[in-house]
Image 1: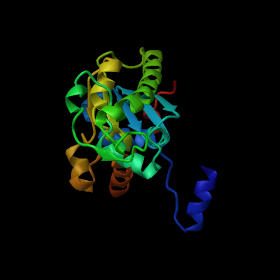
Image 2 (image 1 turned 135 degrees about the vertical axis):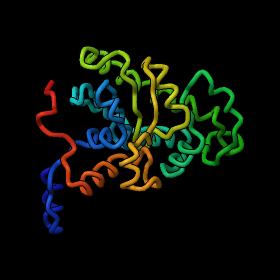
Image 3 (image 1 turned 45 degrees about the vertical axis):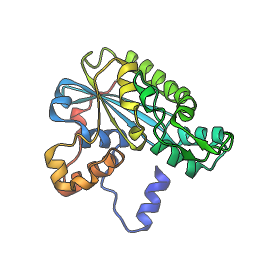
Length: 231
């Protein structure tokens, strides 16, 4: 962090404050009722996945898992013997998280990049067994952390999924099924946020940027220290 601050200062830009990315994402996507009643914000980034718990307008817990969207792409590239860029494209357009309803999607299109198949193509049926173990590994770690903070958030607290990796088809249903909580995927931005930023930017992978921009436009601090519950 200090190195980053030095680089920014050399560009003659003043750093007003530091905000954890998980908190910025939650500010952009959680509704007022979720802040009040309780929610679990899950931000699936490229290198890490963060879990943030809020309840009664207080930050209850932040936890990071060293597994993100890039790990899925690297794993897929290795299994298909293709480039990471190609694997990313396949993951985005074809990769589907394992769900009870995924079988209906098996025959939806074929994608180049699989050197180990007979015709150089891979279907969704080929992709899902590759991604499923990694996805389940992530969900198992999230489940363990949620169980550990069970006393800090009500059982009815829902999941709010954001971040670029959250766009993986079928992941939302799988996560809700595995973690046993209702789930929704951003954008679920407040109308005021969407009006300030523009609906074109209201996407899961832009939640952190939206929050920072919203805060700067209103010249407000995302959360005061008095509202943070240290655990």
